[in-house]
Image 1: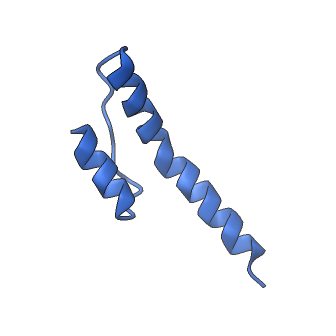
Image 2: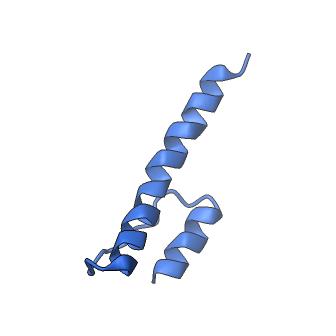
Length: 52
């Protein structure tokens, strides 16, 4: 499930959802990957504003 979500995000699907069910290292990784779409959206918007 985590690999599938990461693949979807890497292809530009910023709506990929990850349900975190673990508090261990895998859960921490899932949490980090779950934050990626928002971070990428923010970076994309920032780059768009910088274009002349």
